[in-house]
Image (cartoon, rainbow, N blue to C red; front, side):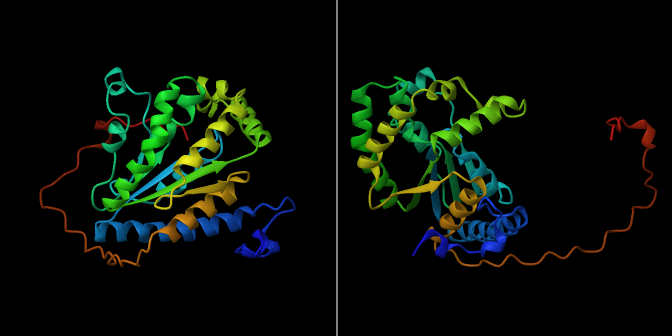
Length: 276
């Protein structure tokens, strides 16, 4: 079966460039977000523990997918973890220790916006980890993940892939837009010239960590709309959730005001200026 055969929609739903039309994309995203809420309620009700790892090329679309997943879900149940540079103290800990602290309790889904795989990627390429540390990570990471699975955690791993031409286009778009320049970190700019080194690091990482208990799933990130829908739909397929019905909410009549209560004058309060 070809990719076109697997498409959910017919040709009329795509533009001349083969990209889902905006209205079709938004309608399907809304449908999937309803399913994500059902997944959330099932996880809460059953006490399941789910971890989703998002890795991949810079500007490949990881953040966009995470944003759409969390847009309509409860942050107390669906939690995003994006750890910064480790502190001096954390650098002396067992490598996986600060990630273990972020793992879900019963009834939680945790999305790792980058994860322990920093060691096999950016830390290796940029020289922040020694080759001995990298080799130890590649040796122990599969055992660490098998241990998580044995402990009852559902572990799902996504790698977002884009071409170097598309990455360059997105980098240039970010650089030109004052709202998104913050996304171009010094590490991102440094990685700009190390495409091949990152490719080699990713290939070796896959060779060691693409295990049966927690395989890598590659998301084609070349078209953002497609990547978001494909990843969310696939994530929903990985968990055998059921439709946990949330009871309809019926607002009771508003109580009558208490006798004798008088609201203070509005002019006694300080309002934000009405600029719009």
